[in-house]
Structures are given as structure tokens and as C-alpha cells.
Length: 332
Image (cartoon, rainbow, N blue to C red; front, side):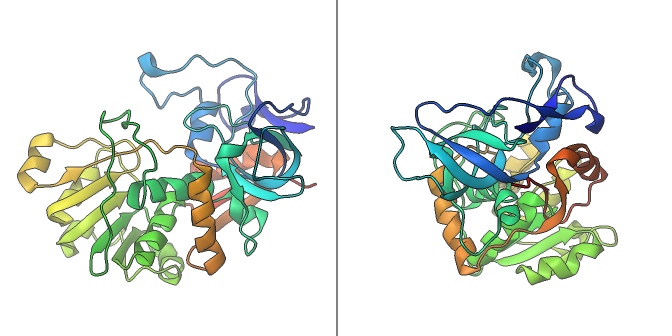
């Protein structure tokens, strides 16, 4: 079969379209013929040699590596101990995360059955493949964590804040992968949703449920917003603390990417800061799949590329300002 392999860390040009053996399956696994692959930040962190982490925290990488966690496809073989899936089932999932052994940038993948759910009938493989990591991140932050594993960033177990009608939720970086699902889930729960992104995304974000839109290139959210119950910041970075002032006392800040907050400042403002490490969870995806089926959720697709064009897809990701997800199509 064909698969994308990384033989050395580097830029998008190190992604090679190689011939490799079709994987075998072990206990608890199914063989999936991949039809589409969702691209996520951990994919390019891996490609770059995990430079995003401090040197002392970087894992030892053994090349060649096949990147990827998210995929949608068709079951072609099932281990004897697997129940609930059969040959011919259309499935989607995020495989073996946290970790870098998903190996979804390929024509076939051995997938843990526990990480899979049936693909919703109303969406295609591209839309399904774009969802898992991003939608599970938003779901585990906002709806149900689904486990009791402490966050590696704080050492504490995250407890989602119940979102009820009348609450105000602000999503920064609202047009991106996690952001556009956070907008939709908060709206599904009945919140008043404020979306922060660049102006070109306004129509898209209003179409998926944003009640209010702020173009950050023209207006600082902190200048026009206050008394927000919950902020989910998908951008992070050193400037994330500027959103603390939009929260009411007792509010919650949820940073998705690396961000630092002064504990004395958050205590003075009465704000809780909480983070998670998203984890694979097939049953949650099955529940989320019902929302796709009902039309309460949809995947925004920024662009698609062939599997052999993975380097081009990573180059597109590096440009930023993504609307939804970038997806690789794998032709049968």
C-alpha cells in the first residue's frame, strides 16, 4: 500500500509517499481502508521533531514514521475478539491519542476498535475525517471529559462547566478546527456565542451559530465585551491573558494551546483556568455522530489534497487562517 513516511525531521518536504506493507491487526483491532485523513497540529509537531516541547520533554523518535491520528474509512477485517464492527462498516476515529502511533496517513490502518465509531450516514468521509481530534477536544472541554486522567499541563482533572441557556461563551480562534466545533457545541447547549476571528470568517461563523462576531484585526474583544461566563481560547500564546478581563467573577478560561496565566491575577479576578489533553474515545464519537446526523454539527472543510500531496497540505497549514479543517483524500 501507499503511505506517507517521515525519514527525518524537517519541513513539509520531508513527507514522502512510500510503498509499505499493509499492517496486520492484533487483538481489539480492525483493519480500515482509509478514505480520508484529517490533518491536526500534532502531525506537524511530529514532522518537525517535536520542537514545540522543551528539549527535556521531547520523546525519542524512531524513523521512518507514518504520521496521523484522524481518519474515516471502511472496515476490511476484524479481529476475533472485536464486537460491534463488521466488514463493510463505515467508521471514523482518532487513533491512539495521546501518542504518535496512529499512522493514519496511509491507504490502510490497523485501528483499535475502542477508538472508532460508525461514520454518520449524512456526512461524507472528508467531513468525518476532519472531525475527530477537533470535535473531541471541544467535547471533552465543554461537555464530557470522559475520563479521570489529570491534565499533564496542570496535574488536575478538568471538570466541564455545565453550559446552560442564557450563558455567554466567547470562542477565540473560532474559525479553526477546535474553534468552529466549540461554537457549534456551545450553541447546541443554548449559550449566547461570541466568535472572535478575522473578518473573512464572519459569514461562515454566523452560519454555524455565532450570535456575535468580533474581527480581531479591527477590534480588541477586551474593549467591547464583558461579563462572559466562559472563554475557550484556541490560539493561546503569551497574549492569551488579555481575555481574562472579558470574564465575569467566577468565570472560566479554557486555553486549548500553550498559554500562561499569573495565578495571583486569576485568583484576584475569581477566574478558574483549566486545560485538558484530548484522548481517543470511540463512545464519545458515537454520541457526537448523532449530532452530525441531526444537523446540529457540521465540519468546515478549508481544503482537500490527495494523500500524495501531504506536503502541500502541511504547507497550507503553515500559512494559518484556516477555516475548519484540512483533509487528505485517499482514493480507493
